[in-house]
Amino acid sequence: TQLLEQSPQFLSIQEGENLTVYCNSSSVFSSLQWYRQEPGEGPVLLVTVVTGGEVKKLKRLTFQFGDARKDSSLHITAAQPGDTGLYLCAGLPQGGGTASKLTFGTGTRLQVTL
Amino acid sequence: GAVVSQHPSRVICKSGTSVKIECRSLDFQATTMFWYRQFPKKSLMLMATSNEGSKATYEQGVEKDKFLINHASLTLSTLTVTSAHPEDSSFYICSARVSPGGYEQYFGPGTRLTVT
View 1: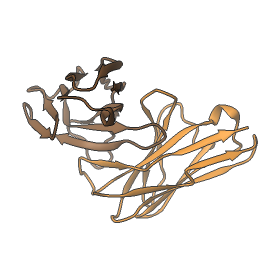
View 2 (view 1 turned 60 degrees about the horizontal axis):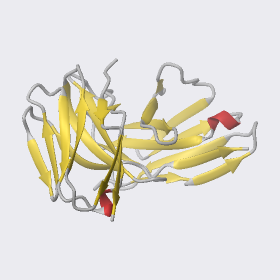
View 3 (view 1 turned 90 degrees about the vertical axis):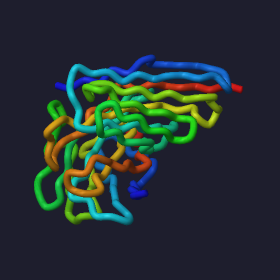
View 4 (view 1 turned 135 degrees about the horizontal axis):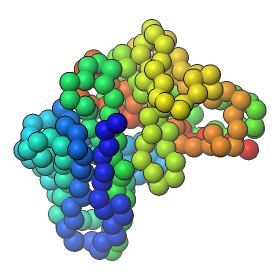
């Protein structure tokens, strides 16, 4: 069973602060995705990283895939209240075919206050 | 981006009745759809993988006779919760894979089921 542990589980910060969320596993993934979910809604895909060491930027969000493709991080610069939500990482197993399933991380709940 | 819809968004039913939830891919064909269950403040738990034209593959511990999944077309999968009980109350979310073997899944907005 592939597990993805996210840390921290919960983060409450003030507007303008920076933060980093970590997603760690002992398993290798062919790709890793980050989602944000707001209460009562489905997760929304933010980014997919595929190559070990890859860094992707999405405005104030920076995503990194570990060199060994076992871990990932999400860094948010100058957080805003609109960043509030549940952040989920999800990995696709290495060598998976069309039936391969995403393994979801344990989730990080972010709250950004004014 | 790819759009997935779910219907209904909220449903309240009485214990012992059955409820059907629809998941549709609106602007793409999905050979594979997934059904998840999410408890409050928790991550998503995969219930089953739904493949068009074949039987769904259920995760360990998920009762296939209770959670009936049908994937009759490339744009529609349904989850029927049979003989629902209060413990089945949850947030059910579907997702669809854009293309076979593709990396990305797009999620529906979820269905809040409350069994009284």
